[in-house]
Image (cartoon, rainbow, N blue to C red; front, side, top):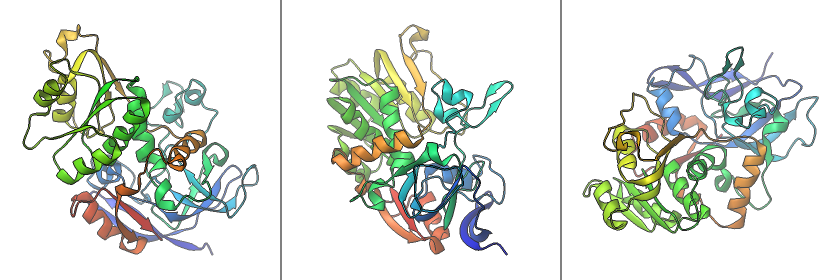
Length: 358
């Protein structure tokens, strides 16, 4: 009889419940990891609310920290008992998408090309990390050993939030001496703020409506913060930049208002780097877009995954150049996952990220 494990299971919109599932069988290229810490992402809340569709019965979550319990027969270079993370995005390494350098879009090669977000499998097309065990596909492409001396909470942001936030700064092409605005200082926006500083931006402006988040933004590298409740962010950014606008605006919420404000705050020839998950159509106002003649660049980014990315992110943490520990504000056991979702989805009590431990 198959052994059982506890897991957070999507049942229907507005219902994610703690249930039981069999511990997965391990295929030749897979690894089974015993989860030691995981967390809830804003994308999981989109799933909970029915804004992003997944199959009923799926285990949710895509941010694993754990210990290798069992390795597939063909997996080399790892050992059972090793502490590891795997990215939220799990590229195979051999698909068309991977081989043209778009690892995040892997996993969905079809006769007609590939499908957007194909590389996001945990808690999307495969059972995810909010459970006692997680089956990692293509383990040799995805498992990254945690360096000695780093705690679970120090590396917990690497699988998704840190990778996504940094990618917003990287895709935006930030250069040394740039001025950058980051719209929304939730966990991803805060990591984008930290990433902008690491990329060489020398003036970083953080925008949010929650004073506590603006305080954390300063700790992550923001030189100026704008409380959007009391100031018009675009006017304030133009004031701070003497009317010039910013070189790069990073949008980290996924709403019309922040996307539009990011576009309006750009200098001519500037870049809007979008990280938000949008649940309705976006409009691009013709004046903000300079009728298409402003030499603007608008780019979108899905969290980069794979073991090499994870190694890079953990080396940033290990070096002390960025400390993501302030992002973990609440802690729950897996038994209390429904309570954790209730707190996180309603953004109560100053929550940024929750650490979930089995």
